[in-house]
Length: 85
Image (cartoon, rainbow, N blue to C red):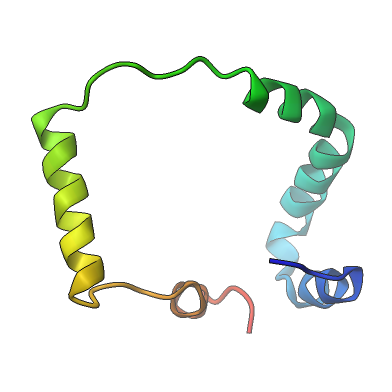
């Protein structure tokens, strides 16, 4: 998904005052630590641990939910939590 700086500015303008500090800190983190984050993500160890029966069942249930349309769009979730337009 591509987003322009203009779109980002518009979203920031819609933020409630009580989370502006948190968003500012997150953006600062992204700017200062992006190289470290990229390095970390590229060097994550491979998870070779087998899935548990519970995890397999949860995956199957999720797949069934998707097939049956029991999903929420990102837009619906954002609306429910009053985030964005």
